[in-house]
Image: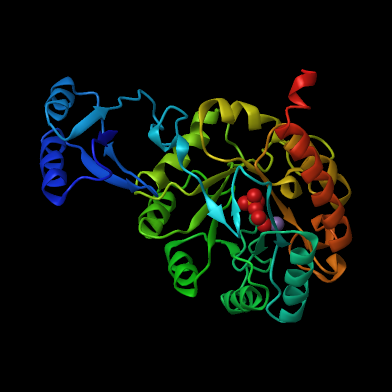
Length: 350
Ligand code: PEP
Ligand code: MN
């Protein structure tokens, strides 16, 4: 990671460092911050001669050599001061709430419009809505591109930024062209490196935020952080890490709840943690407790499935989605807990 003496390198200076790292098989990825641009050396930056040459340049303040497979996502990275802004929230300054339907029913757009208004009223900052769905059963409803128009209409009606999962490059293009604000990488694709790379490339020059779910079978945290690094290495570090339960399941729950990894992630990365309690436990009645547990563990946000009328929903909504009333109460309690934590009143008990 190269830190220039000025706020950013001039084109000539950038050309010079690009030439030097290129000689060692690396490339430069600028990461544009609000005040300062830093320059990641993408590739194996452990070559001493390359570092010495860079350090010899008069316009370089210092070179940070983080020996980490996820050097951009690493807590020691210069990105540690990076802040993600979304839905009027600076993540970390307030508990971020993403809420909405698992799946948009293209035959019944009104339901999403009503859900959108209801989650906004309940206190959500971002509306989620599944356009394309990863389904275990190949004959189950797979989503419909028409739902993208419905999602964007819900954005226009409420002003909420919107989140949708993309599973391939075609969906990625459609979602970005439509103006989706947050792209979700699902648990099944968290290790799909071609997709991670394609997303990283596509959002490199945008403000788009990526919600990266933890993979169904991800074990070591490094695997999760390295997946995030794939995206960040193209220049957009707006990545939220989303534990959502893993396999094998804990008997009775949909997955094995993993909100407890939040403090462990925070020891390794600066990236915000936004827990999805809905897929973790898989039943509406268990979701509020899991959401509160996530906040107690230090989560920066929650991604919760909610529906104006769960029984009329499709996908996971009939069993997992919270009603607007329960969502509002869960958000209110989660905020109180988040505030206590911020005041140090929860950690003080430890
Ligand atoms: C979803 O958010 O509806 C979903 C399918 O999530 P996951 O990838 O976590 O299963
Ligand atoms: Mn779902």
